[in-house]
Image 1 (cartoon, rainbow, N blue to C red):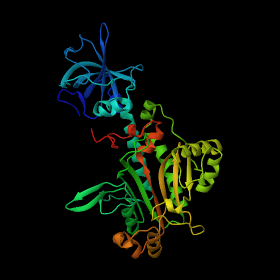
Image 2: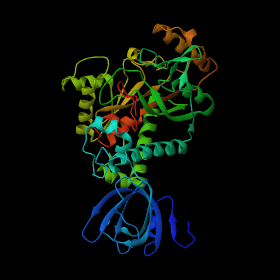
Image 3: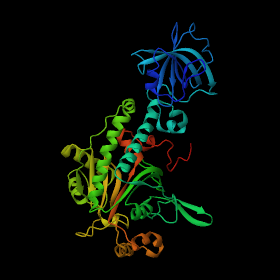
Image 4: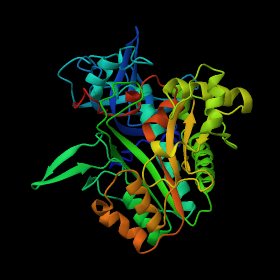
Length: 438
């Protein structure tokens, strides 16, 4: 947009647009990120919603004093765009006007202008609104945006319909104690543990569906890998021949999403110093095969995988297949949800899988039961009361195609992509057993 005096007014900062204004005068809105005063001039680093832009202040050129200027001031600046390969983005702005829009009333409690904050996790989370002004911290959530964008674009290309399911529900998809209860107009209700029931329902009329939405788990974990509210990337697909169709779809999705990140988010990967993994084919082991591997690496015969087991299996996959991902399939049926289909060849095991990435489970999925009688029988076998699941069973009663799907924890995926040490770093405002604010 041009102002009345012909100056280019850039409301939303697009670097390519500014580069086209080299040797011209522009005005931009930004925040003062850093001031470095020299003897004859000052470097003023301007922070926008995406970039750091180098401004040059010289008293003789700029009619405004910088005595009242400090880090955290929001400003409108005007200046001449000049190419300079030494500058952050390959250009700088020779400032001619600086108008303060607002000034902070306190000093930042964190070193926002440093490459990394250099503080502990608790200090970071306690001062989240300040911490996220740091370009490194902010880049984490641009990558998160990229993962979601790549996932969504892939799903739509593959004929999936995006759905939005309730988060206040009458029954938990997985039951148990790890569910938040609500007083819902004098009725007992819960926060959804999963969109499982609803996405299965939608398969009956959309064939393929996906959702990107919050998931709630009332687990009293206090570990580096657990949150009580996280974002789930879920999809469900009909007319499958086996759970391997779901695994192949996830493999293709991950490959597409990582390529999407490399293409569209390369600058943020560079800020974070991240090298993305390569996804071609993902190896798999059955649960019993995994136990055999774990016997040789300190594991014990059991019915599920412990965190240290997941790390061992990742190392095994990397050593034997050069893969940072590995599927573990055919978990014991007793340890999987009631909607997981049992293996017809060996009903002790469910047609269910986990995907491990760099030693952490990021996905649980599998083939679901689509036959009404089979679903009722499994509920009874697991000590459940089918009449309590009347609406859920209606989707089976009135017919369902063979189907399956999965759920991915967004924060876990981002945590491992970026080699973060704690999942809270991958949550903008994390919720755990101790943290309800900010």
